[in-house]
Length: 259
Image (cartoon, rainbow, N blue to C red; front, side, top):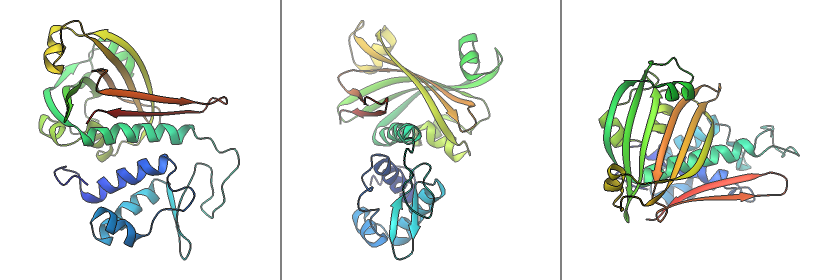
């Protein structure tokens, strides 16, 4: 628990438990009870109960009187029993988005710019908007204890959520979207490489021309509507993107940063 974070304690616990659920940590023994979780996180049972209620609402857990609290997998009836052949694609994607969000909570952010601009042709095409439509553009630099990690530019359709310079300093953009009622669904991400120009090199504390990881991520809501376009440049010595592949096409991805 990071008491300096602006998110309520129950929301922080919800994010941690959600990530652990997506990693399958509770598949065998179930989710610990309220007393145990309260002791683990150093909070009251009321706070734990609110976090668990959010997980129930997201259909990630099911609470059975006398039987405890158990993960609820996609396609599994709430009455219990796993459904054979349940797809893990949604769970893995949700886990990756949760991992991205958690990383945002564990790092510091400096907001370089936050303003409403007219969408260029490329931005409009990505977000499914008319050219010139208003979009909120933000530029942020994220840092961990080791130093700066990423230089991130995001575009969000204007009016989708209340976004300001102050709010971006306090909360990750995905949190602002969720709080505005946006139901995050799928995301498409590409990873390539790019050389640091003078502006980015200054913010990331690297030499001009240094190799950086270039990440483009388009996030959609549950109705497949584009809600965020992220274009990030990351220091490869402080940012890691891991992927596990299986013969049947299963994909599990996770990102991590140097602390």
